Length: 389
Ligand code: NIG
Ligand code: FE
Image 1 (cartoon, rainbow, N blue to C red):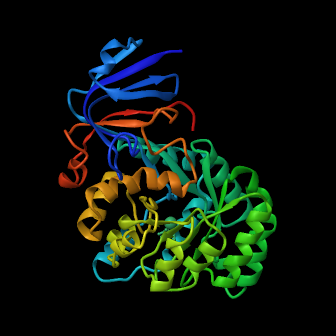
Image 2 (tube, rainbow, N blue to C red):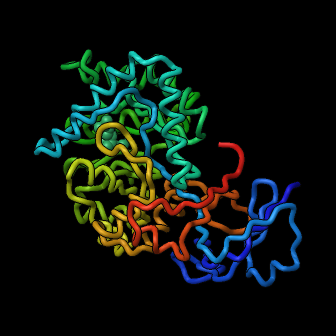
């Protein structure tokens, strides 16, 4: 079993109270032993002097943090929407309607074109420190195009999400119930074997509360696990529905009522905040402070998609969360790692402790603080990733 010792770590973020006060559980002058694909030991660099390993990496006093867990992406698509972004920056407002232009481009792309674009984005994400990511369908919106989107996504991640309920496609205009029947019938049958999760865009211009419940119920009956897009464009029932279904996560949460925050606080549902989308649509940011202060579990994700948030970069989202959403740098890093793991209901990622997957990052910086302190600078020196998806 090949082993690797990473030593002379100036600041190790473990995300575990076994090594220091949470949220980050920081250990100074630390070392990590990796055997096969798992972390098997964490301790001080001094005590690591007695350990012999097949390979030795000297972190030269820099910081080491868990790999980022990006729990919300839409990476299977063709084309881009730079024109729509330009129009928005000139004063247009974002609505769900733009999704259809990506649907048109995606339907005409070949599998290989979709695969190549996906690989390009996965490469970007990996090089900026993302070691686990979720990926949704939702730009096909026909039985075949949703199924092939998920099949292609499943080649790169186990965290695949069926989002046939992204918007009502043009050919179903005026017949929303017929589209919902397709989503919960033939389309679900074709997609279920490639998907782990089911998601619905429950918001203005997309799906209402009754359809959302119906679609989640159908997905759950097929063995899929619920997560939700909700409260991005206006207040609504989405957050309550997520809690009612014990969804792993409810994503966006830009417009919340006090009741929404209280329901989340007494639930197992993570509020996943997507500041890249609020940035790129020039929308208000979610009230992260109210959520955290109420005790809600919070995650940060990119929402990478060609419309509302065309970034794969988790450090950028951390910087936005700190500067614009008033999260502390520690809260933001915890949300981008352990928070993401919770939003995927995973215990093997998001922390650096014995037993966890060996997914971690050596930074080109002495402290994780530099992620928000030096926005836009690539501080990822080295990405260690366990094999497998
Ligand atoms: O999460 N909100 C719905 N879906 C995406 C946007 C997709 C698009 O605009 O193409 C989101 O922001
Ligand atoms: Fe999204």
